Amino acid sequence: MSTVPTGTWVEIERVILRPDQRAPNIPEDTARTPYVMRVSGWLLEPAAPGQPARVRTLIGRELAGTLKTVSPSYTHGFGEVVPELLDIGTAGGKP
Image 1 (cartoon, rainbow, N blue to C red):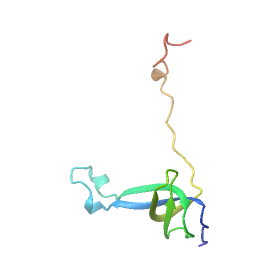
Image 2: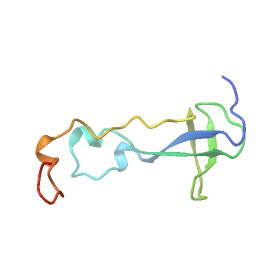
Image 3: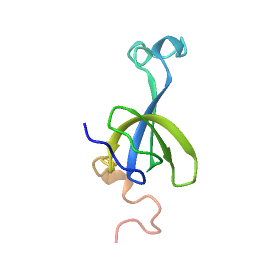
Image 4: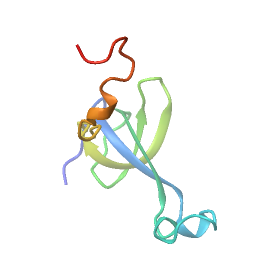
């Protein structure tokens, strides 16, 4: 496992609530899962993936967690186009 140098853009993860700390009225499958925070920022000191790390975020917050990803990218999308929604907000509908 190689050490990631200070100043590298990384993602850390921290468990906010363990399953036994979650609200009793949430769905069973959700209740079995920890509530996790993932944050990207610049590494404040060298760390290896899977090890404790501290980062400074874009807005200057300093947070600690487990180093998960080096140079994280965004992989989310907004799904398929919904044709019925395309006319919303247009003055006269379709061109």
